[in-house]
Image (tube, rainbow, N blue to C red):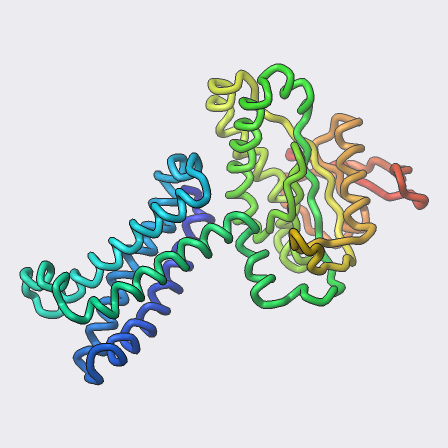
Length: 342
């Protein structure tokens, strides 16, 4: 598991443990008896249960077990994961009872306690809710779900963002040679490899469009330590590291080009039957055209001069001026530079 992904999940697990230590004592006091003993039991139960459930969901289910769950349909995954989480709730509660009394027999006896009449329905509902939220998190994206819940883009808002357009080279030829099923698996593997550099550079996946991946940053996050540039070369390094696996499974190693630009955009929720957060503005069009130019000129990454002026490039990255480009769909020429690793 990548270090950035591990750190993110470790923070998430810490938040889950903290929330459980607040909710569990209150639940025990309200459904059992109003005493310090029950409150303390709730704290112990909360720690044990959250470590079991959070550890399973964040590190096991999305770790070693991820390939298995990826093959399941949404509802099959939801039911199976909910049952596992409910079982972990009950085991965690029994373990908490045993730890507070130091009596191994309390582990078994806890499953016959009258309090389970309140705890089991609560655990069952909570298990389904947790699993469903995590499923939706994967479908729409972690930050996107947070934006929807907080209403950040309920009304259109102007902000400054950076966009990186990535496009696989020779995608039409690869699709013909591999067939649609194996080509899709190649895309899935490539997108998985994008995840770690995206997390490391505080980026978000904006959208997948066929063989194209669009990554975005808030302006300050993308400029900080040249995150937007480091992300591109981080993805290249990850793909190169996994080159033997790609070669073994697909007979080829994916190559990609990138276009990078930043500036003012307007973002907001769009759609009725299918609602999503959409950003509009000339910035996206320019970034896409820079990526097209990179592909046409066989360059790795092309960045606008306007964005490059605001960046402090890593020491191992070199910039070469491409000139004032006349890009498709744009009247004004765009000053552009090609970036390569030394």
